[in-house]
Length: 316
Ligand code: GLV
Image (cartoon, rainbow, N blue to C red; front, side):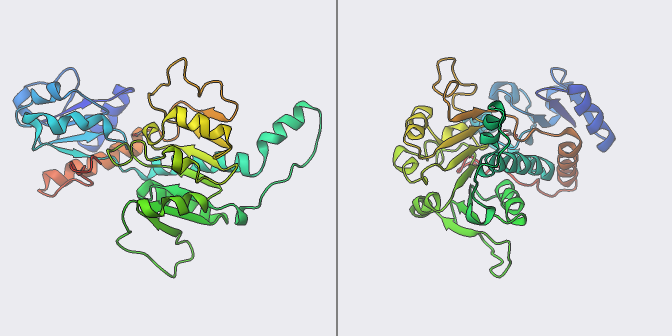
């Protein structure tokens, strides 16, 4: 049985990393697939359901990115109903995303944006800023990546608010790094109102698309910072542009957009209160991601389940 590898980029690097970690596997680099009936696993950023349906013994698809919205079509294809989709949960990617979030929160909370302006005016001064302890950071989506980001902020003194769809299964109530918890749609308004910065980490699912409606945007604190490193679908870009005019939120840093990339006429490009960073917050790092994937392939070979699998009813 064999594995087809179809990376978005850096194909040779992926192949050499995987060959070193899985020396006993037969690996094919797409579009070479060998015998279609022997393909058991596919490793790809994305692939059409029709291409996958050609593999009659396909068992699992491994996503080469953390997000899995690009795999939605699989659920609807009659030939692929039993194929598992395995998400990529890579601690190194979560570290990168935490560093990105720290960068932008610090930039605005510590007034580095104003310092750039002062320098242009040949002034060497200290603009005022709110100390970390008075600058609660809200993480919208408190899964593996969200909680890594929360810890990064808690470690350097920021109060952390965590919003999740459902209550966490286990909380360490007494732990000093445990965030203030907000759960479900009913607590979203309070969560937004309690946070000076809101970092969205939510994936694109039927539940999250358009979640930040105009009513909820109005619940942001005046002047709040909104950082989106989840998926752009969480907010309509025109609603966001209007909300920024009302200063709720007061500033947006968008690594993801919907559509992505934004259309040339998008209100985001020229908006004075928007920073766009071109989907760079958390790259898939071949060295660490290949180890995570190889460990999952080994688990499957030993008759165990890969982890974590996409829940088809939730789309994540
Ligand atoms: C990036 O957005 C990813 O899904 O890994």
